[in-house]
Image (cartoon, rainbow, N blue to C red; front, side, top):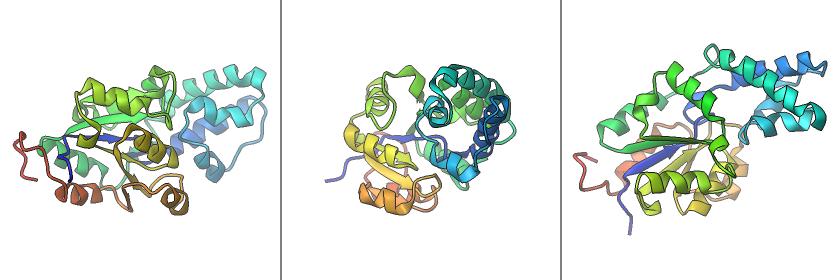
Length: 226
């Protein structure tokens, strides 16, 4: 028996927005500043999703990590307003879901400051009822804490929510939280990697979330026509 969906939680990077140009630019700014070799975009993309500390850690000596983070974060605040855009279909989907009366939230391992820079830059903050990021938690994704806290704050049961992400860490977090997880193939995880974890659905374009929701009974208390 399917449950009505009252809340859709989204990952941010690779799911709703493409911030990879800004990430790559800031990452290699750090490499240059520390006299380290620049890294190719493909390698940097594969390292995204676990927060900026984990992004830099494999490439910087432990004693220089603190400095690397300061350099990265200072550069990144400006880079995000120049190299970030909506992924195809994302803005349209948010508009549709809000019009239907669905609550929306963001669950991102990205630090809060930079998540809000993106949300404000793309004028998307108004769509979300809650925004929670990795730096406000003891453990980021794949730990389920970020999802469980959003559910609690919005008084939503796990069966009343969907989580939409783009990486294996999203599938793992959603499963551990007891929330059906949809993965869009717009991030750095491959279809094969995602398929092994057996998410609720795998989609190519985020607009397909609307089609999935039409097959689930929407909250009868809302004014939606789902």
